Image (cartoon, rainbow over all chains, first blue to last red; front, side):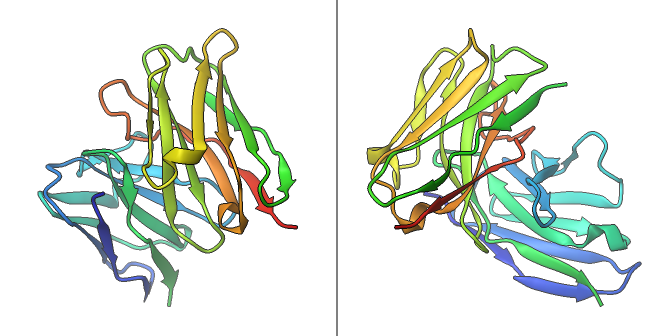
Length: 107
Length: 119
């Protein structure tokens, strides 16, 4: 199975800050990466697919980049409503696998 | 707009069989893959498996010996069976749709069903 290593496990930043989360795949996966946001008690919400395509309705402060084995999710201007856990996921091959998540808090 | 809703079996005893259903409303199941994903307390997400609308399935090797996933397009329903459950199977179970071209691109998700395994 492809392992997705996500970092950092948690971060704390001020509103308005630029935040970057990284995900590394254990083997090349082209651009087949999705990013999800999960708030407590709710299902994950899709943010990004195909590495860099923004899901409909997602604010433009969210962006994704990368290919091969290194991928990043960036929040350009952190807002209070962005407090959540963020997960990367590869859908290049079965079994589909997720990163362990990054908890984002406001400082 | 498609909506997914999992059933809620609640509490199971060790060695019992978990049975979950996901009702799909607002769209046909035709052309899509239908996935089950779970999340243990305070943990990450684990893909369990999926079924294409025509019935073919794919499973996570870590669970394959205990899992059966099926679709009933006439009832717009997805089902999950997990045998011989133990405490490690305690989790929130989600159903999620994948596209015909990208089975693992999960959108949307159901709200989730809490399953607890305890004697």
